[in-house]
Length: 258
Length: 320
Ligand SMILES: Nc1ncnc2c1ncn2[C@@H]1O[C@H](COP(=O)(O)OP(=O)(O)OP(=O)(O)O)[C@@H](O)[C@H]1O
Ligand SMILES: [Mg+2]
Image: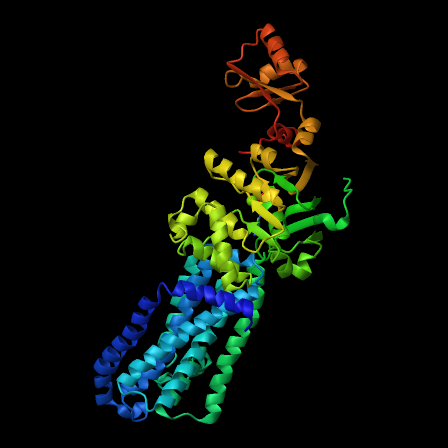
């Protein structure tokens, strides 16, 4: 990360100073509600009927790390769609910035850095709630969880930002949310173990990037991680990030210097 | 064109410059700028005049190094935009056609953020912002959000913002479009001051009076090509008679009358609601018109303007 990219990051932070309170409330309230409703309410039912399916842990302990990964992805994708689109077509901050000495790729890097910051802080808030519920074993685990969730967010943000810069209609952003983010959210093992899916569908779940994030967070949280699997997860998420950056380099140049 | 100045005084030089856009991946490329050439010297005010879609903004974006040329050569401040875009951009100022201010930030913040994008030190930008707000007469509004500004104020702010890096060249894409006459004159005044301070101005406009007021030299563009280059007075002298007699007849009668009166003028031009007679002496021509019992509803003798040049060169009016 270089100095010109930090200029875009600092612009984002100036804007964020105006809205951070709202996002902070959401970052705390969201996990609170989910863990109370699904963990407390639904979890009681699940635990009564079949704790064996989850490897003898309570449903809420199983759910929380998955939800952490999924929620961080959601935050990251939200930050990567609307605001990027607005910067090109709406408010036009990108168009203003491209007239200065920064290059399009600097804008990509700076914006992604800001999204990484947002993903990290919202993961931090989530893990704080988990700690409050007694759902994290140690501060070390908690920190590792924040890192893994933030990486998951960035892995999604990198390609999403690269794509969103070229989007012409806001409805495309909604479609992406409805047809990509929501199915991933629901089907990547957030709420249940993918082992319970029909055998035919299981490889599909493994192929979704979110599953790698979910499984990584869950392994860290429950202490069930195997080194080989952890490396696979990390590699997948990093690969997605790097690919996104490579694509973003091209799309930003093409769309901001048409 | 004879440029009897040393080559390093030519800040902007283009030759055979082309811009093609590909609308979709499969469609044929569309040529927006079709092989234009020009040279601008330090301290000049140089204008691009042309109707909608002529390729003015496309040209400006290539000069501003935010749009690569499809063909031809372009040198800005002696550098090639393809190789040294960021360096060139650090030495020029840009007032784009569309508003790119951040409406949620304050007036001052807009300048601060913009200056920071150039990598200027925070303290330096602060000082510069105060000075520029003064120049743009926006000091009182410094801390109000841009949302609340009028169109003229926004335009002044955009110009102030474009000066934050002390540019040698200022690119102004339709600086006064959409402003009321008073705001336009106020802006022209600012631009005069900048010109006097030695900044080279490159501007585009639809407005003849603006081009005549501000430009030392200008090119007339149409369909991506340059159809004429000269000083405003030179263009009028070369492509129009000194005076124009405008006559209005009953709707539909213009072209009939044009034939009847053609021999009284150097050239006639039929517009939907007016008939233009190009002549050296409008009053004499009017006397002759009246002597033929032509009876126009209204008549007007005026000096020829760049509008007439444009009409002569392209057969179309400039503002549709
Ligand atoms: N990014 C783009 N992609 C495709 N076509 C474009 C693009 N930008 C401009 N054009 C087309 O190129 C042509 C020239 O546009 P340009 O904006 O340069 O004209 P202009 O002289 O500035 O017009 P106006 O006076 O309306 O601002 C137009 O037909 C326009 O539709
Ligand atoms: Mg234009």
